[in-house]
Amino acid sequence: MKVVILCGGLGTRLSEQTKKIPKPMVKIGGEPILLHILKIYYKFGFNDFILALGYKSNVIKKFFANNHFKFKVKTVFTGKHTNTGGRILKLKKFLLKESNFMVTYGDGVTNQNIKKLLTFHLKKKKIGTMTVVRPPARFGEVTLKGDLINFFKEKPQISSGWINGGFFVFNKKIFKFIKKYSDMLEKLPLEGLVKKRQLVGFKHYGFWQCMDTLRDKDLLNKLIKNRKAPWMM
Image 1: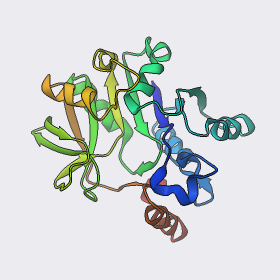
Image 2: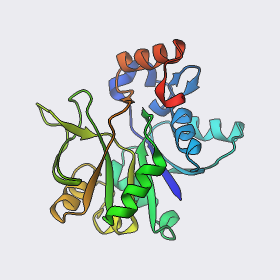
Image 3: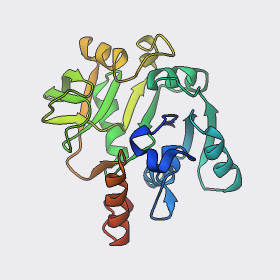
Image 4: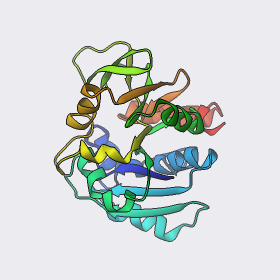
């Protein structure tokens, strides 16, 4: 199964680190956070990756051209200013043979069981599965009725409860909901799935952390230094 990593953003909230490199290449514990993410999937047997590149794409391309890993990595430039949904749409030709595929952001780590995520997705038989978590209230707010997501709003002013943690699984029917390269995945596509009752939430109660700010980066580095990084255990 193919795994898409969205690596094209400008990383403006981490501008101290991203003036010369894209955010997925910012290092934690001496390695780019992107490599940590790939290793999370690889640990559960997923080894076929497509990196959707944008801002400073050459840095990521050069890294994977000069280093060899046990997994397969394909890098695809999807535009410097393309939105998240549009990046997936630009990868459609590489995903047409896949009944389902995975997607996540290039700046978040977790200790969730990816195999269980896939099993959950296949069992629910919906178009989309979103990992939902309960950390800081800075992201898309999600409410659930059972396992079915019945409300999704990207980055509300005040948030509580479950939030979008990335680590998605999509059936190829998702392409019916992504119409344009300007589409943000977190807007019309996901909200459209909610309206059609086609988006479920995989509740993850364990560790999850994105690297959105310098403070987040310092936290992740501290966990690695103290050998308490849950995603590496």
